Length: 252
Ligand code: FPP
Image 1: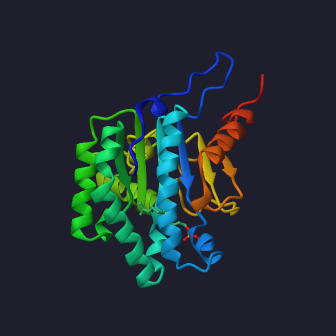
Image 2: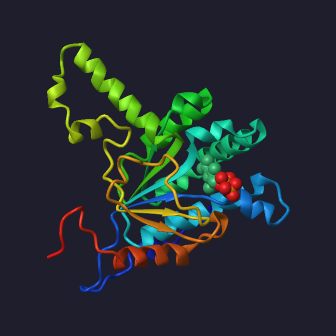
């Protein structure tokens, strides 16, 4: 990743009448395979180009004053892809963790990972811990990477945690409410997303943040992820600003 000059990362000044940006943007980065196929390239070329689009998106989030960015990098279902593609994706992850964390740390990015990290090799698991620990003092952008993530897995794990507390006699089932279940999810330290963006024209959540996105605005863009850039990010933010968020209440 090339060094990003500090002045480019400073928040864009906002006019008083401008709507504030979404505090938390979550992104389903879809279309790497189709991007590669349309160029007669192997799928890994699409994933590599996708990693470049991810760098651009991190910069765009910081420049637009977004505080939280969550990306769907590897779903629990992705393990079912052919072994070669799984190796390519985990190889890219290794590369990212070894070579790019230092720059994210310098730029004020705090990293977190959500998902079933036990399915990754030990060296990757160790690097995930190091990346979280060495960026823990940062607060400019909270970047959460969903890896081996599935929302249904996450909710089932939270249910197991609470059930174990009931069995141990430390929790009364009648006291289980939304807040308690949310506090047992992998995202317990993370605010709910305000905006979920999905690229490639597909219009579904694909097991991403199902609980947390209950009131998120959904924006589907017709661009393949490797082609995603600052103008697409700005367009999604502009669409979000046009939406009226009522959280189930009636308008005044
Ligand atoms: C979806 O495209 C994308 C993925 C499964 C992986 C996303 C990964 C990156 C953007 C690269 C960065 C990766 C890491 C691990 C840091 P697809 O392959 O499902 O595309 P298709 O629907 O066109 O086949």
